[in-house]
Amino acid sequence: MAAGDEVPLRLGRREFLVTATGGAALIASAARGQTAPPATGTPGPAGLPDPTETIDLWPKGAPGPPATPPFETVIERSTDRDLSDRSVLGITRPRLVVFRPHRANGAAVMITPGGGYRHIVIDKEGYELGRWLSARGFTVFVLFYRLPGEGWAAGPNVALADAQRAMRLIRHRARGYGIDPQRVAAMGFSAGGHLCADLLTRFDTRVYDPVDAADRHSARPDAAAPIYPVITMTAPHAHAGSRNLLLGAGADAAREAAHSPDRNAPANAPPVFLLHAEDDNVVPVENALLLRAALRAKGIPVETHLFAHGGHGFGLRKTLGKPVAAWPELFLAWAGGILV
Image (cartoon, rainbow, N blue to C red; front, side, top):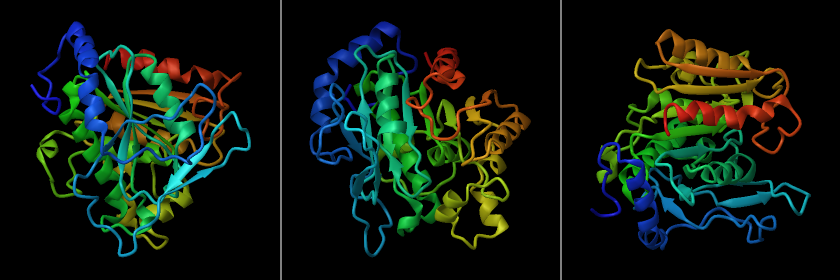
């Protein structure tokens, strides 16, 4: 079977480990000719090299480009030479950046970093989680998606189109990565948490025309983890910056509802892991609570963790010394009953 073929249902653990090891040459070969990961051209912290393997989402280019395409720009925001804090905007070639584990456990996580739909965080909510999860056996795909305020024809659905396409590509190439196509989760942070929630509620919504065989696969994640997510597009709990970039400042109530995941929860949504800090002064905790209530009303299992302190955008690096530092292990325990 070729590297791009679908994995038969529920391969055994031994088969996954063999596939993950034996398919390394195929994966390296497939990576050639793909767009490089977002980078500044300067090396990252010592001992933490940037990833190199990517998967372009659209073989003939992303659909519906603006008349004047944006220019991809990476900005380093950190003043600490040993701690990168990069962000990227102007994505015209959306792509997955791959973190392969030494020994694959057969499960995958697709990460959608945040950035308020103004830019996409590279390190704090992307590469750092990619390294952490892949060290624990997960094959990780960090998605650099198009931004809705940059003139794409799909408008507020442009990031969702990339997320749907990415999930389908992961499943289409599952055998080459030693993963089970029925064990693919989505995880997102802040505005990327909105994209994660949008995907787990609107995975069946047609937001682009199919382009190849990969689009025959389902875009529904098998589990989803929106972390301190933007959810509602309606005041008073909407994150104004994300809302305005996603919908436009003059969006009416119907447009707000169409892009608020709590208003679109289906009965076949996947199990969800929700995490938020109650002292988040950027994205109010009510966002997570609205999504939780909507999912529970449809009978969807939701594991919810609320922490009194943590603020916003903590990822991994800003949890040290706080109770919220427990969240990654809580996720692993939850995922262990669903994905592993």
